[in-house]
Image (cartoon, rainbow, N blue to C red):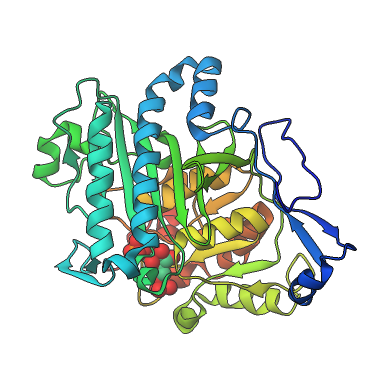
Length: 409
Ligand SMILES: O=P(O)(O)OC[C@H]1O[C@](O)(COP(=O)(O)O)[C@@H](O)[C@@H]1O
């Protein structure tokens, strides 16, 4: 490359960007000003050999050779990545194309829908319908699960949050798409106390499955770079969208979480309403009085995808607890908490309500909410220990369950 002092051809198909090398040549004067900006270092940018890079499409082909059951995922992932590329383009140019702001409608959660919420939802629905493999889709932006007519070989139920963190999108802050894939079940896994409507429709009821039934999950983060992180139950792979070739390239193979981190990520503005145990945990780790013995720093973007991605990369814990205001927390079990918990567990981390494993929870309705803490295993475990000391305060239903005594209404 014209400015590169050295070129390192990728051997594994995984590309390492940005060799740094001090420059001593005459051009340093021109670089001089850059020197001031870059501290005298010249950045070498080397592009991968297109014949050798591992794109998401190639990765799916290769996985299908290794695991024949992946065959069905290929078209699904093909459509999901196309949808995410389209959404990335729309989000990235929203300020220019006038796609910022509200759509003038309210979704089933009572939230004002952004134009990009509605568009992303339509793009994903359209893309999944195209696969012919997806019989039912459920979305944050749809009141009920949607039956997909064109599913001639329907095998899957796909649940998604088309544009998570959309309250941040107009400010250009990280947002993302979260998705989870379940196999269609012969028998509806509906808890008997559901109302007649849903009971009447077996296949729609197929949507209400516990996280443990997920066969695939992922998110696509729209930020300074676009990242797609996925799992099929064999570890976690991270891809970066290369805008030059329009392909997701494998840049973070086999992502794993450290046992402990140095970051906690929660909306501390809600801390007055938090359970005592959690307040104590945050106070202690801030001062380095937690089990790790080192001080933790706070980071909070306010977009689950952004906060979870950083947690996956650097370790630590992200959480949205239940509190006196939000008895069940804010985040939705089916298309936010469960898919993210599958990814985190596959990366060696832990995901919990503070008392129970997220992946064990059976949703009773599509938009059920749940408290959630996820991230480095020992950090989440430590929060559970702090919360256990004050279980009666926030989770009387759990105490009751253990003591088999009815909860006073
Ligand atoms: O502003 P708060 O209360 O901290 O909530 C932030 C959380 O809400 C969300 O924005 C909810 O997601 P949606 O934008 O998909 O409704 C999460 O991404 C984020 O973690």
